[in-house]
Length: 411
Image 1: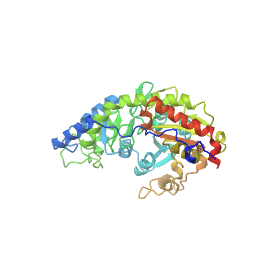
Image 2 (image 1 turned 180 degrees about the vertical axis):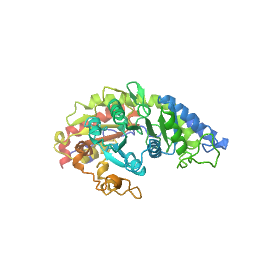
Image 3 (image 1 turned 120 degrees about the vertical axis):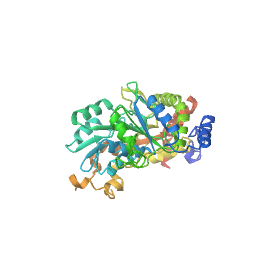
Image 4 (image 1 turned 30 degrees about the vertical axis):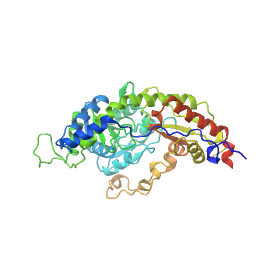
């Protein structure tokens, strides 16, 4: 019997590749050669990191910026600057990369998971409110996939309960919330420049804030506990060498020149996909809150309902879509609470939770929305959204094709 779906030997919807990542050109090459020839390869003697800090802070509507070695480092230092310590609790979402929660563990505090919103996969402010105790010191909302979290409600909870609000903006370069970029909407914001990120130097991170006190602390922590006007071998805080290199600063300055146009294109293509995919039975694009002026679409996500595909499991659908030439994945298969590090509390020497939560347990039944997200989400990476309108139409055609011929997936 002849087959229509590519997974069964039929013709593929798409043969040509989507845009690759990272995108680089003469600007990046010249920037790296400038650093090479200068002989100033480290942040302490060069000027590229400082220039990027200034440019990125201005771009993201923040007063202060500290370039660091990774997004994970940024979270860790922000928690230090916030004064989070043993016995404290920090509320985080369970649908995120583990660094959001392990940074809390490394502060010797206790990560407390609050479930996510079903339409955005961002942390639910009502669940944050329910999780607050007298021990809660901070909350880390994640702008997941580039979708802005409900910062108005989260900041209100922070003010009401005296919590430090630290944005995990690793996915949200260039996104807009009520016309304002992220990172200093809360008390501090943390970015990643790891290889997959919308702004990348392979590795690297950034802390943004509008508070001079937090800026001063983070800058000292990232530079071995030194103070700006202190002696070289004069150390005031428990810091380390978490500095960004001049190579990264130079690359990021060049990449920053591309970010605005790339973000605009991703947002346009994301909105177009939403409009074209919504009518397909069993395919539900993610919602956009009214306060979201622009989505950065580090990921384009939609929710898959197997009932509209004859009960075909999501993984089979994802495999069929990949076979059609549309690279995609199922994303997270379990929430952080189910990862061994949290389920079995493999926190190494960081046992601060035992001070107040010696019986700490994470129960999947407490996070029903996250559990559902781990069963229904389909992810497309940000580089696909740098394609043309024809590229977006190929995505739509492939999904329509799989829906029209789902019976073939039963064979």
